[in-house]
Image 1 (tube, rainbow, N blue to C red):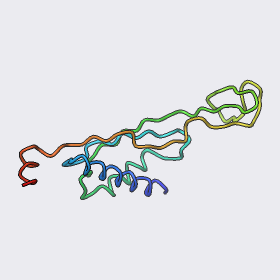
Image 2: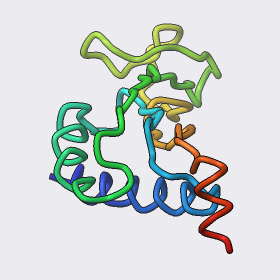
Image 3: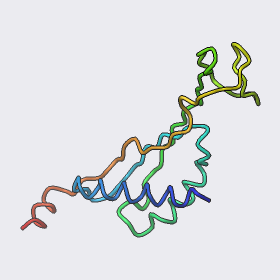
Image 4: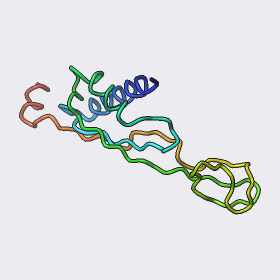
Length: 125
């Protein structure tokens, strides 16, 4: 359910940057999401289709890049990819871990369609 507020924030960010760039519309959003972020791609897409209606971002394509989780054992300093149902260090068996990657969510970039020059020139006069 938290994907709704996340998606609304993504829309606000995309529209703000599109306006600052003088764009006619937003065509693409490139999202980077960690596997352990609890964000579900399909939910973001579902809410995007709703919240973007009637805006300059309606119909924009969402691109999801998933980042696998990486952790470091604070006992032996071994880095590893946790998974398989175990959160124990494969080196020493320790359970004191610090997550290095995999919980992030950010908007990497947006694609925009610029205002045609003739129209932009006429609107500025």
